[in-house]
Image 1 (cartoon, rainbow, N blue to C red):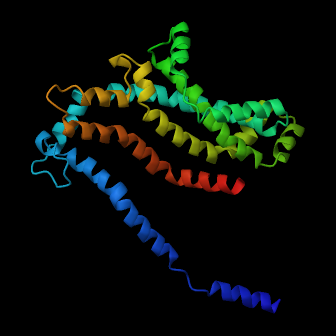
Image 2 (cartoon, rainbow, N blue to C red):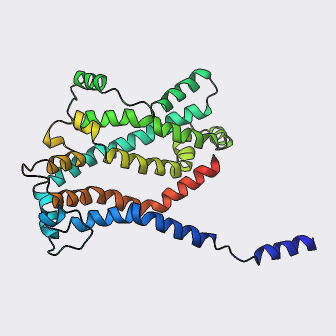
Image 3 (cartoon, rainbow, N blue to C red):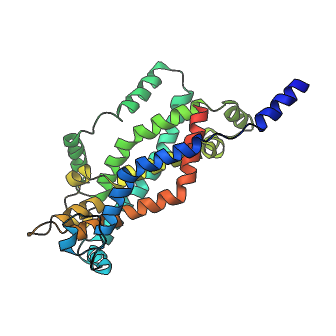
Length: 289
């Protein structure tokens, strides 16, 4: 016992390693050219007039045009319309995908049937395979939803569901099944067990999935371009493209940079608010896996 106590004291008195300081320094050196410089280029050129912004330099503007550039984003760039449409697609898509994905992952994680496992791997395969555009347009046309925000949201739900199922199934497999059995013994139904027992435990991993879903749906341009063909239904990436290509003379980089900043600002705010929850969810998911 005395040896054990001495060893514990020795471990406690061991000097702290300088490795964290070195890691932070290396990360900072790596982040400056790959993150800091592009971010500064984006911000500083959104404050310049058209002539200076077209030079794409890192220097401060000789004449500041913050109000002019960002005002044009709202008046000419249809920013509010794009923000409204993006929210109308992103919010229900994330909510439905998280709920259905968690329910499906619960079934896949607790089932031992080979047929169920086959469908699980089929859902996981949807992460790698690109969506079929022509059949999607045909189905949406048949449902009279082609070109609408709801049809676009349905496409996003179908293509993003496999990711949440794959991410959540492994998390549920690492959870003790005794909690669910205890709830059933107390008389809880399957739905009650899911919402009262399982869903609270899934909050960390579902929060991580929600952040990744928001980023993917918010920044989607390719499928929005194919499925949303009217200016009234344009999302933020489409309004940015329309705004950048509207000039016959050339690209007005000061307006483009300002629009990019405003398009990315909601995502940055979401990340700053929920970064601790994201890190906690990733850490807890890694420990359970």
